[in-house]
Every structure is written in structure tokens, then in C-alpha cells.
Length: 210
Image 1 (cartoon, one colour):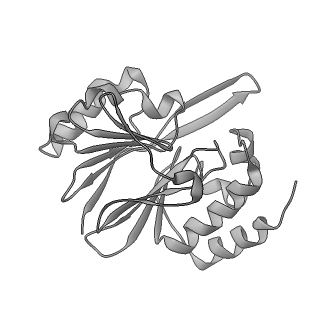
Image 2 (cartoon, rainbow, N blue to C red; image 1 turned 60 degrees about the vertical axis):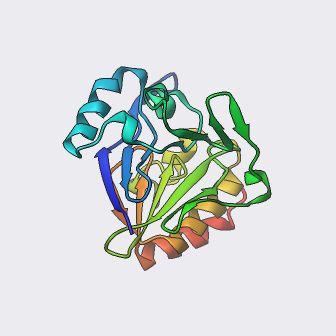
């Protein structure tokens, strides 16, 4: 099992069609491998170092850095972690070595018995979700912008307005992850519990075509 620590809650505020104030959720998975998921903006390096120190870790203690997709607010401090293997969307690398993994064929990437990376395209066509089993034996999905925030369950315009390269795939993958997870850490909001009501709403939305 592993401990899942939300270092910083993400947020987003669409101010106009041309401007959004946003930063992503940043999560630490502590276990056999120490993993950081989504590294915020380039202006947040000191915040991440400070948060890791509170967990008695340094950047050199991190084995994997996973960016759920390649947008700038999710990859801003990847270069802090020079001893880690990096997964950015469907891309897996260490230094100048790249590892070809068939995410595009739907195949998950297993890090250990408690952590796996699942392809969940929609927001971008190479989005991934990290699924981890916590020390309390609950399944937690770290979804990036597959889910923007809890409020986008009943108001899909929130995640649609944030950008979706394939909204049909995104709806399907939102439901898929809700079926797997007890908890979701979305890209731009606090962690929330997945209820039967949430699953029912997402199932209804799967069949919406436009």
C-alpha cells in the first residue's frame, strides 16, 4: 500500500474567453516508489521543495514524476527531479532514453503493485490518469484535467470550457475512472469521494454526442 498526500489543491477560474487563472493539483505518492504527480507552474519550485521537506523527502528521493498531460501548469517543475523517470502523457523517458509504451493501444503502465498509469485521452489525446491503492485500501485516481473539479460532474460546461480535444472519449474515460475509484483528485480542485450518484450522472453523460 502507499500514502497519497495532496501537496497542493489545484484551482481554476475562467475570467473571460481569453483569460483563466489556474494551477494544477500536485500530489505525492509515498511507498515502494516515491512519485510526484503534476508539478505545477515554473514559478512553484520552492513550494514543491518545501512541501516535500515536510514529508521528510527531497527531490532526489523521487523515483517517478508523472505529468497527466503536457500543459504548462502540469509540467513546470519536472526539471527538479533529475533522478526520476518521467512520464508525460504517453511519453516515458529518463535523460535522453525514451521507452515506447503502447498507451495508444489502451495498455496501462504498471509502476508497482499499488500504482499504475492508465491512458485516459479526452482533455488532450495523450492524457493519463494515475490509479493508486492507499494504505487504507481505497482506490484513488489522480486524474489531471480529465476532471476539472467536483463541480464539473453536474456542470460539464466547466470541463468543456477548459478545453477538450475529444469530448466523447473524455466522457467515456470520466465514467471509466469513476467506476474504478473511491476518490478522485481532479486537476483543478480538491479531492472528492466518488458516490453512486456521481457514477449515475457520468453514465448518463456518456451517451451525449454534442
